[in-house]
Figure 1: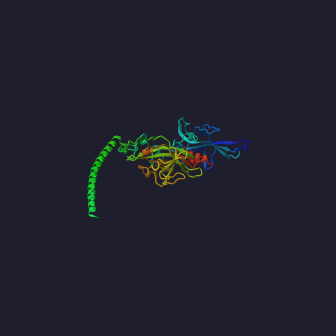
Figure 2: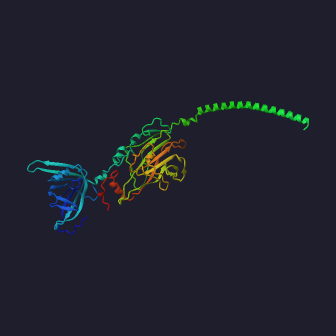
Figure 3: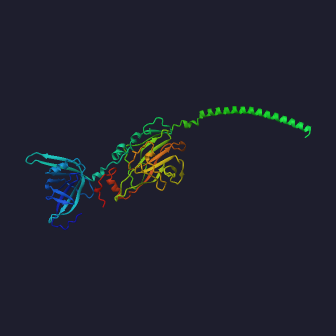
Length: 194
Length: 260
């Protein structure tokens, strides 16, 4: 937890949104100036960036989050229509701002998740026509409950992970197949080395 | 010798000669009778075999019907720390002469690395055949004896069953901890119908070869349990592996997990 006891006269906050879409990273803040945190530069969207409600729980709870961006430029449209946008990781964090120097005091992560869906909204009411993108995100905590089911004992699952491995190709054939152990196999059937 | 003594000797010899001839004749008669008796015995024995048919048991042995219970929808288990597992049947085949069955039991996924990057290892601590702990012969895979919980040895299946252990794919045969190591023979060179594409990638498994022997009650596969020991034992290492593994875990990128 950040120690803010030295800022008794007040402290500013800004929300930062980072979507790591391959080739088209989206970096926004709801502040009014461009800020660089780490190696990332966040575009100031001010009130054009709308972040859904976040929750603070003592225990880790998964919840969905919606991020809406208005007044977007062409680069952002390209990012939004990228094929890799789904399941791109997103991070939402809050920065504490020194009101005297306007510098970032510290940051705290509020949300980590992945983009699950994307929605475009366009209005044609001149002169107030607008275009917005809504990114719906699922929490990274959800991914713990949505973990993969593991490799099952069938050829499809095996080849999904190891494309040339044929080790499980006979499982379906031998299921409930019978063998007359002790008798010469004059009529080889499924599951035998016919 | 006087003339009288010589005459008695000649008379004795004549009598002895006649006796020998008579004995020979009688012996010939007895021989024919013996042959006839032998022929009778042979015929009698043949009838007996056909009636009781003790020797025809092996010719008409119907064997025993074995049904494979493989399931295509079962997830391969993941073993951390130390565990006993019976595995999942993923292949079974019988040789064309009907005398040998081969089974493949898949025991566990082969796990990833610890947080510090050390690759995990999975060792075979013990194999239990029908609840008896197995001791292998010097080749490292042929069962020599089993030992029950009371310490009693049982050599009933000695030399009739082979168990080949593999950890991390078909090309990595391993022995039982504290016992002889097997030759470096890939699993696809053991299992009759397998080829090099049967790699059993990143799996821990055993191949079991059973020779049919009803006299020793060896007519199938009893419960087999493997005692596995994974080098990943620390909770942090286990959780990290599970969180990051894309095959059996949560698939979270490693960079997303704070390990500091």
